[in-house]
Length: 175
Image 1 (cartoon, rainbow, N blue to C red):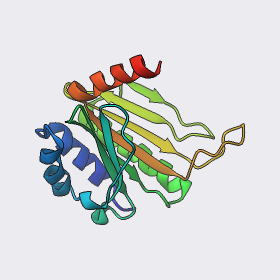
Image 2 (cartoon, rainbow, N blue to C red):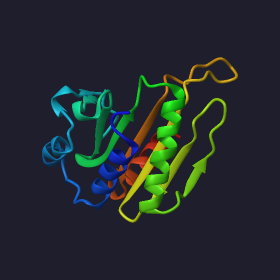
Image 3 (tube, rainbow, N blue to C red):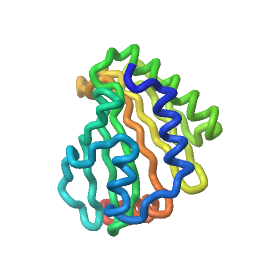
Image 4 (cartoon, helix red, strand yellow):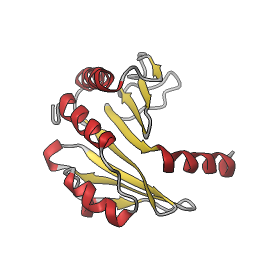
């Protein structure tokens, strides 16, 4: 699998321990240093003071796609969709390996949702400056027939000082 769960865990740990960029103009070179081709990203429609880009290529990570967001012009998060196109069994195994590797470095997740026949589970680590969220998608259809999407892992790191006010504003605005 490309990248390996160990490579992803190392990258996440480096990001968590690094000095985050303050604004987008500082963030683009930082993202490029992580192997993200920022010029391949698509900006999503703006939601208030939120801006978000997704689908950026990461050639060294195979089919992985990356994205990032800002809130009130401050850099807020970085995220990936990993192992899209691999088999469900391989994706779920990689998710478990990645969760173990992150737990070894960052401690037990604050919340865990166990895998079911419809979902590959989720993990959430709340760290001092950042949070890490990971969702594993199995590709199975829900009992109501609604597809969950292709097997992949969605991984996000939020800079808490920016992301938490963004979430609070979204809850106030959107109920």
